[in-house]
Image 1 (cartoon, rainbow, N blue to C red):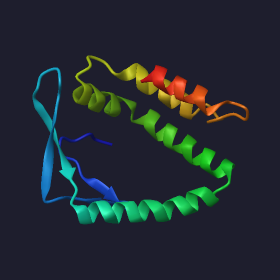
Image 2: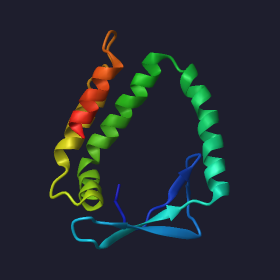
Image 3: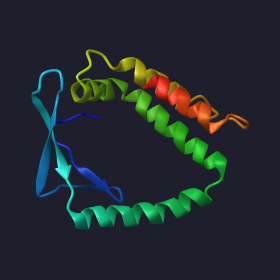
Image 4: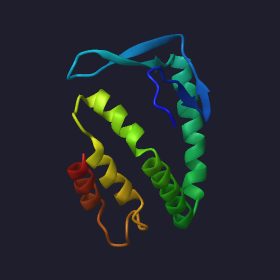
Length: 131
């Protein structure tokens, strides 16, 4: 994965460009470091429609299948952590944003995303502490 300075959107898994873009500023330097898609209303509606359709399948997936998907995602994020650190550093103006990613990947990939009896309120507190 290479983090570029010009991004595309994903609509139903397809990389989509837009007629217009928006600049992304590094708040520390005030320099534009990327251009991101500015979705049209039609693209937004299309994306929401696909997301609603996908939710039905996700909701029907057993917990073990959802956990396995999250673990694969955490593994992928871990493999590309440096690219994400670079992106976050530019986007947030932080000198180093790596620790947040390490904690999040460990949290997602811990084998039990939300153990039985683990209150969602506690998970939100953990996520807030990480970020």
